Each structure stands twice: as structure tokens, then as C-alpha cells.
Image (cartoon, rainbow, N blue to C red; front, side, top):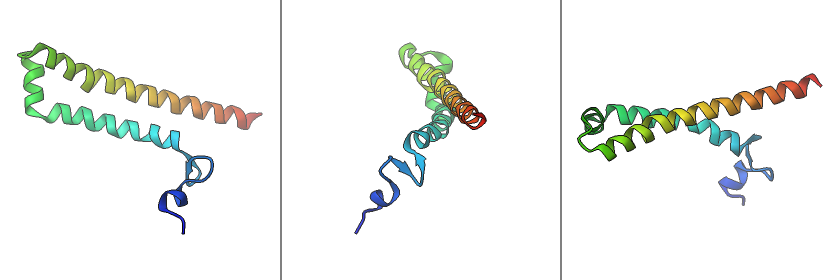
Length: 93
């Protein structure tokens, strides 16, 4: 009897014919949004970022919670656009 993982994954490392890399990219945007929202809604985080009472912590919260998450969202969207462009170009040929 096949396991659930064997059922979902075929020999090309895809879940129901969707490559795992695409699934991972698709998960990046919601996770980044959750991190940004969590960082913005946590009162201790907001207090540290607003007052810079602990400068290193505030810097880490700003860089990790906003700058890197925005970069993750941007690069994910860029990769989706490149993939779509490659598919369109392939269909034209």
C-alpha cells in the first residue's frame, strides 16, 4: 500500500502535476504577509520599533519583519512573472 506522500508525489517531484518549487513559491507570499501582520500587530514589537528603546532589537524587527519580507514578496512575484513569460514565449514558438 502506498503512503500519502507517495500518492501525492510522482517521480518528477510534483504534487498533482504542480512542481514543488512552484508550491514553495506560492507559500512565500502568504507567509511573508503573516510575518508582516504579526510584527505590526504585536504591541511589544510596535513599542520597540517606535521608541528604539532597544536599538538592536528594533533594527532586527524592521529589517527582518518588513524589508526582508517585502524582498521575499517582490522576488516571488518577479519569478512568477518570469515563469509566465517563458510559458507564453514557448507557446508562441
